[in-house]
Length: 481
Image (cartoon, rainbow, N blue to C red; front, top):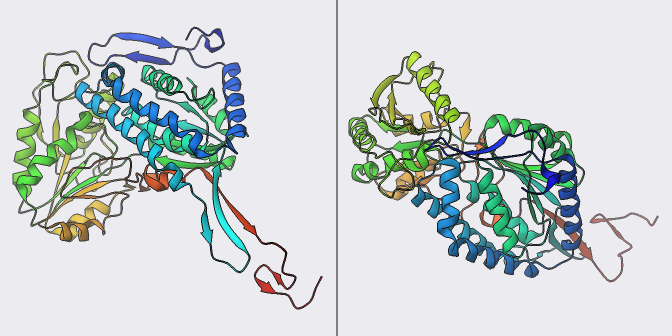
């Protein structure tokens, strides 16, 4: 941040270690001059890339994957300091990023091959070309992974990216940008911009920007999608969820009780696809509650760099206070606090693991996403009621179903209105698994083959040696013009 072009008097971007509460570093917003310079470089690179083969960019992705493997610990530590993530979980995030970069290095050329169309019009094919400069708006909970999901496939395509990361994870944003640069990406391929909210709208509106990808809150998605729609920019949105964990009547409870606590507490419960609502048939309800209570009471809160710590602090004081307000709202609305962890003597931003029951539909907390170590548990009479309750939500991102057999679990899963369901297993994110949701959880997909097609120009090319005078638009003309 020594470039004077970047300096302003506004200091919105700041790393505050949520374990120590230490303000580590503060960063200035990008100036209009730096934003313009970044967009100009990205646009110039797009024009160059427009006719370059995909193969020319693959070596950078391979180098980037190797960088993330070679520097796992140092990159992971940045995450832990920025947003409090357990160091071991941060290491896992770094390695997942390496897998994503390598996946697109291995498959991008195959995915982007022209597709032939059988038609009387001539020799026809669909060609995938770069769309242009993209704007990415990404969240704090998985600072590298969220960026790699959008960067790797679109770098392979040939779409340069400018991005705004969360204000509380600026060091992670700079570390990712630096890794991409050191992997050999040309100037303009990926540029971090510390933008104000007004500047985000200005960048989205810029005629050089052709697409917008956002992962974040519903509120943020609505604001960005509104601007994208106004200026006719293609966009993808991943906006969180109230994911259901369905325990069917015949579920193997030994498997359920092993997975359920992890599904809520991983990354301190700050995961878009983590299980927020445990929907349990009455014959299994008491056993699940007891298992959750046992696991929640056994967590070890402390230094996230310590391998003995099992529950990290939340990302910020603001997030902790917001979650407490949600819990208070639920209790005021008639919910029961089945379990609340005893307070600990630590000034870090720890939220005491909590289990809520008896949340009725008239409770103002019903259907709200609680982003932290709070489990909502619902009792239902049978599997049909479980599916109905799961679908009674404005969101539909992910979900888990446990049933007596994989086949029956998949049958139930297919009835759930959501983007992703995992049957008899923990939710996971892998490069080959397409990621996205429905309803207010957003639209579009990242990762997998679909993810690389989100921001391409699918150009139809039809050729023949000479025109057929008697055909026009596939119809035989009654006469010549």
